[in-house]
Image (cartoon, rainbow, N blue to C red; front, side, top):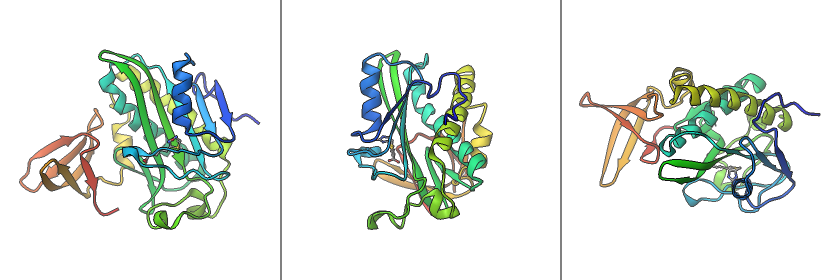
Length: 254
Ligand code: BTN
């Protein structure tokens, strides 16, 4: 049964029972000229990738592993915002379908009861002034029953939190529908202004303490949410506010 009601997102669909990484596979398809919106879904990954060179545990049968190939007509420096667009779209789809109070942990993790249920990894092929393609990979812990010991304190699944099993095909379709809509709004606006307020409403960091790690120093502040460029606004004790980019910040307390 097909649930997918999109114009382009996920319409060109590749399903693999097993692959190395859906991101790597989507990049291969990108090199071969696959269309904007091509979606790669796998039942299991043998070399699932997380951010910062980490691996992403990808056992068969329970989770969602997928990557969408995009060919955005945007300057390359706007590509990082696409990751936040996906985080927001995935959160909306989960909220709508599963009625579970998922939150965003800036910039692009989804968390439930302080534990991670979804991670996003964006990769890009670009020249200085031109994007060839972007791959956004998303892993959603859907029906995972248990995690390896080292993850059990920090990871959870929709199933473990709600007690109900998730229809993966339906959730994948829901994420694609929301993503297509948010992507088009984002490209039209050129920034995250159409949904910065909505994003901030479900941002777990809002009003919380964050620790900003810069080379050589650490500062603590309170997060006031994102700006239209996807940067995290941080208010320091001395009253100054700074907008920080992803990658520089570690978030306390969750
Ligand atoms: C992170 O939070 O570190 C990012 C995790 C991203 C995992 C997904 S699973 C589907 C896609 N393929 C990969 O190899 N990684 C992403």
